[in-house]
Image 1: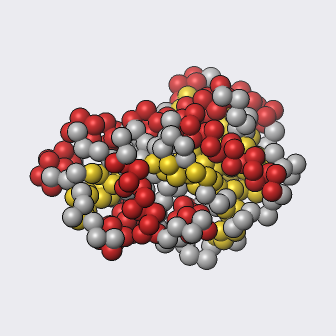
Image 2: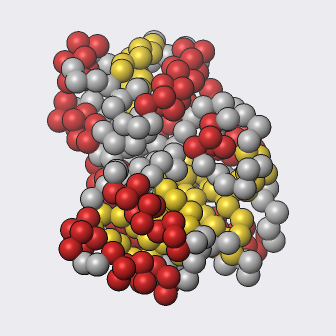
Image 3: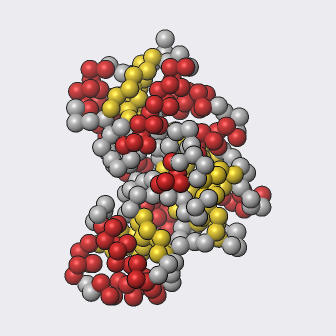
Length: 311
């Protein structure tokens, strides 16, 4: 019998439902592979539950706040329980799109032009000034709440009369928000598996039948297509793989992560964000990329466990 694994799922973020699905899929795979696994819903009594369950390893299947942001990782560090995926710092940086972009800029890695707005600036400074700044950046732009995942708190702006509504919506989630130049082109994601010398799995082009890869498209079977390999020249694909690899190491990820890109009409890739706990549901991208590399779901889950045990 191998280690007793606690699958941490649910949680308190806006992405609770997705996490329950990811966690269930991982739990089933662990059991099928012969691991002693137990599901642990991350609620207020999480510290007590973790102690009572007496697990050897936590498989983190949480998305968003309190799961992907370094907080649960910090708790596990304090309880001396090994866990899957990235450590505290990488998790905390990657959950925040602004912090991520600042590191990408420092490393010389391409990310779309952006600026930030704090709630304080927005209330004190005339909203008109900010609108003018957005218009001078050139529409379309994307306004994002930087710590939300699953495209929650994101607006795609094509008209200036949408600006104030989009800003207000993003401020519902975060006190500082991100205004980013929208890259018109192909959305591609790079799944990465490993620790110090990770492997970039086959790339996936995401083609949404609705034209927008939003929450509904993401989690509804048939609304988005995963195209493997992407409809891009080999040289562009290689560039994306190199950038994904560099991003993974720059942020300090471990285990697995997924880097999302937009590739413009000239074939120039831009890094949008990195997900340290990619979805692992039946419609998820990461398992699809692994399958394209000849790694079935159960093997993938076992591999993530091995990487977590690797000191």
